[in-house]
Image 1 (cartoon, rainbow, N blue to C red):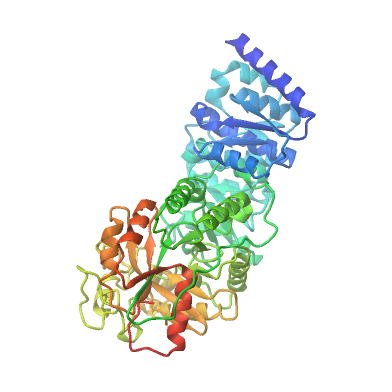
Image 2: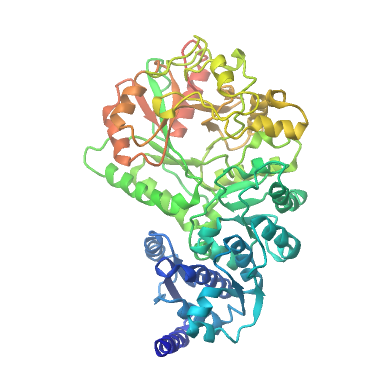
Amino acid sequence: MWHDIVQELTLSFILFCCTRSHSDALYVIDIASLPLPERLPASALVGLVNRNEGRPYILGEINPNDAAWLSTVQRDGQLPSNDTVQTLSTLAQIASLALKSGAARAKVLYSPSELWSLPNVVTLAGIYRAIPLPLVLSESNSGLAETLQELPVAFDAHGMWQDAEQATRWALDSIHGLCNSTASLVVLQDPSLLEAGFLVDMVTARQLFAFNMPEMCKLGSSSNALYNRIVEPAWERKSMLSVLGYNPKQEVVALCSKHHTEVSLVGDFCSALSFWSILPPIDAPLQQSAPLPMQPYDRRKTYIAIISSDGDNMQMAFNVRRQAMQQRVALCAQPGAACPPLTWTISNRLAEFAPFLLQWYYRQAAKTGKDSFLLGPSGYGFLHPSIIEPSDPLLSTFINGTRSAAELLSTSAYVHWDDYDNSCVTDSHMDRSGGEAPAGCRPDTDTGGSQGISRAGIVAGCGSQGAVKSLQDHSAGCMGVDCKHGLDHIRAQDSGKAGSAAGCKNELDMERYLRRMEGTNIQSVFSPILPFVPRHIGELATFRELYRWFGKESGASLAQRLGKYRRGTIGYVYMIPDVPLDSMEELGRRLPEHVELAGYRELAQISRTRKAAADESYPSAS
């Protein structure tokens, strides 16, 4: 065994020496194929080497599509044409390369059984430019241990902390100030995913602060206090902080902080970001296909946009969405295809973390001429804008970020997620001219609006304490209320008032926020949630979700459902990623004659022509 390891290291050194003189050398290592204890160290070294070289140098593959994306960027000329791709197959090889190049200068020891320590271990690796070395690996792999024995131990994390909270408190006191970008980007990652290598390379490449506290969103807890210590410096500097990763107990991490200004940047299963993020940037606005021609609003028709959800989730852009877009293009290319218009939500933040991905999606959409993009929730990033204090400068920063993102992506709309509390909704907030509810979804009163929801139903479903209740099962066809985030409670905490009294202004807050979009390049907003806002706020067109489409429902079934909305309705269907694209094709073939599908831009134009005609005697769900 020792002979094999020495031979392997010798070959690695020869490989390194032979290719180092070529500035365009490129390495690939399949991290997912390594034994689990080696994946975190390998990913950390990938980040350190890419950081040291200052260019895409090692691709650490973890996700199944990573190899395909590499082929894409090579084919598109995103990497030098004379790159020589070399495959690294072991941790020893990448360690040898990192040592010889000076990318790794020390080591951090840790115990894999102490999962709560891993965010600190990865953070320390970035600070000290160190290889994280699990004790089990150093004890079982004598060859690797001997190779690294000359490296000084920068830190021994074994037994240092007893739980995640203690580890985070120590990190805030001791190393937070040594990290980069703490006012703009931190990493919130499940330790088991760090162990598998996800986001580790990004932390070490950029010397970021990583943490994980399962109870960080439990208001009033010591973990919540620590979370506020993490995000408060960014707020004090009036910097918009992005939290990269995921919190399964509360997706909207801004709800867990005092000022509610940090952006949830979902990407916990992203891999190789230290490689993708330093590919050539986007240097000009991306171009979408031209809007489809539409006739003026006709009261005898029903107008529907299909919007594909979850595009703000970066890991989906890397993974399942690639196959979905490829399937969509293939279906539309078939002779006689219906190829109905489809709008995709997409993350503008890919411009920072994987610019080539945005370019690829835009090129694919151009092939159909019927696919378009709008910004995912809630524009620049995922938070609830209306719970930020109107006087907070970061609210203007967020709006400006949305405007800039829309300009770069050549879009004029976004999906707006916001405050879920509707305990104070009155009949005056309901759209009395709403379209007919789908079959099996009946309003409690005749003033319930197009979604078949009455004021009584809303109040019953969402009490003053933010109860976890819903008025509907989306798969049954009713648009409902999701109060799981309990924003009335958060508002009460902020204002010192009790329950629903603090939540009464929610719909006004959302409308007030949207009015700040007037005069910008944002021309329409699509809201999957309540509260209701006017269908036009100045020149801004607003649209409410008619229905949420899950994969278990066929396109034919949805076509029948859409045909039951009252004629004259304008609205959109939110399509969940588990809906196969052939169901979209089936929907296009089975639509009733009076139902017209449109992209988001066409839907906004139809809404404006109706407004211009001042015809309010016919219903709409927008």
